[in-house]
Image 1: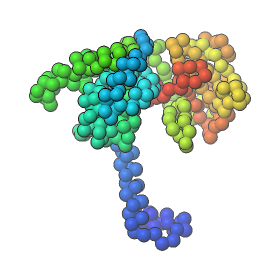
Image 2 (image 1 turned 135 degrees about the vertical axis):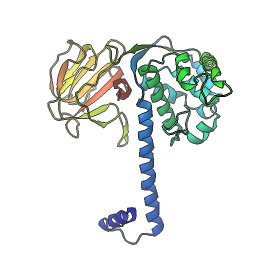
Image 3 (image 1 turned 45 degrees about the vertical axis):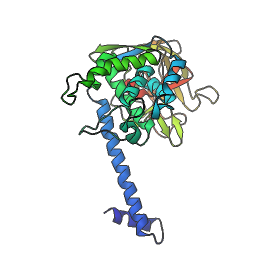
Image 4 (image 1 turned 90 degrees about the vertical axis):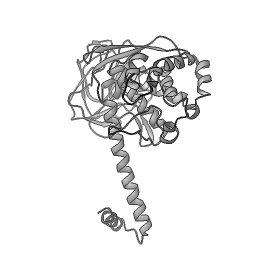
Length: 342
């Protein structure tokens, strides 16, 4: 069937004689892309599962850069990944020190077979068993970061001891030597070598709270996520919808920007009609390409208030809402998906 499709494609594009080797090579490439897509879906399913609570992590200190850098010098395959871990931790709202400490422990300081041959620094498993394999180590770290976000922020496993009950449950059937009892003290010791935790995480059972963000529209359809797209960085989450769909404040705060067809040079060029809200916790949200703005600068809004209607203004390829979560008013965009529970 694949060969028939390929032959028809060749006919359509007017390609002349093509060797059977090339045909089989293209068929193999299609198969590999299908396999990668299936594995990515399975990984996303695992990362999103068992979310029964919600919480947040707040800063209690800064990274001890000297201790951090010294520790990474001994981290084997992870030695050059300090900045990657910091970035992912910021995106996922988790402590980079805890993230690094668990990665060091799970990989025996960057030397395990899982990290060396499978790019898997977090001991992540397929649903059917077996260690996950990632195309690159950065991909493996990103998946580990999402999983830690789910366990810490959503499930309320917000201490090393609680995480140990998931990563290395004492008394597990697959641990006859009881080595899991070392997970908590060893991870704690590594945290100390890295200079200590930088965030305190609170759990709040029972779903969304005012400390959480809500999806700013009903019946969301994600059309583009945060990350590299078409050779550039897409710094938000796109939701497809009809023009005029009500847009809600994702969290309570004060409106600090309202612009109609924001001009180039304003810092909001290309966003069209745009609203930005400051939430008072070091976070801002931005809503772009709107057809109508329903709030004014300085207005206080509550989570869930209708602030605008979606549209197709500015540099837009079709009717949609472009939504951002920022750590600075004029930048610092982070991936909204984990904070929205997507």
